[in-house]
Length: 301
Image 1 (tube, rainbow, N blue to C red):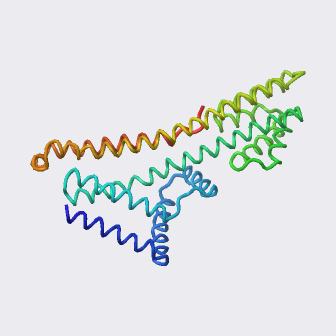
Image 2: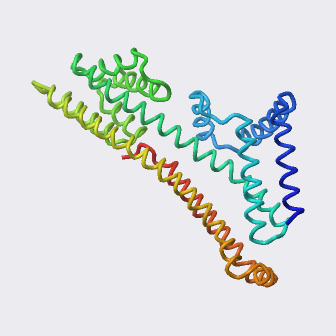
Image 3: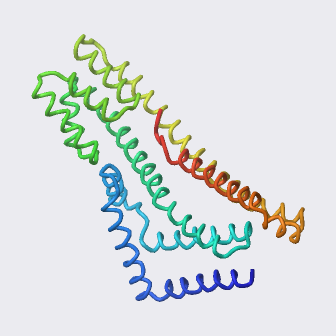
């Protein structure tokens, strides 16, 4: 136990020294960032590259320093926890390395969440402003042009609105433009708004003010519920992580109840070690599943 504590303390001290030395730390962070980017560019799917580039544009991507700290926390945390299970330095080192391999997956989930939040906000802007423009122009295409020219949208939604405008002029109808946008952004508010405009365009209406007002209220109610859901998820996420960490540390309670001597004797049997590995992997799966739930379907209706 003393040797393990010494190794962990030495690792932390080395990291702190590098962290406080700006020149050395910058070189370390640049080296880590370069290596990560090489692997990322080689293996990351195109869709994720687009998402991550947008997250970078939004200024919400982690810095190399933050990634380095994350690596240290995961490695040290996994090493400490697994050492409390097996009291074996080799097993702790292996689990520390495995814990670091989970960081790309967590990064993927985080970027998807940030990107989906951004897209939902853009869809909110798109629907709200299109309704306001339509109330003035009484033309769906003119409303789209007004929204596009106002520069309230950002890519990729802005580029898709331009595509809708071009398709409408090319085909002489708005059906294909609406179908394109509905497939690209599968939100109820998008489909319902498009259906309303399609009905007004094809059937005509003497007074669209009330229908547009009801549509705007529906959008406001949806946005409010989505933002409330985000806050609830964030609150749940904190409690979930605390609970997950406690599950890992339940082995300390077992050791206290059995006694260290009895526990160490039990570690000599293969099925106890297998059971402990199973508990660790089950807890890890539980935590990763919770992270997946927290980061996915943000803004979904």
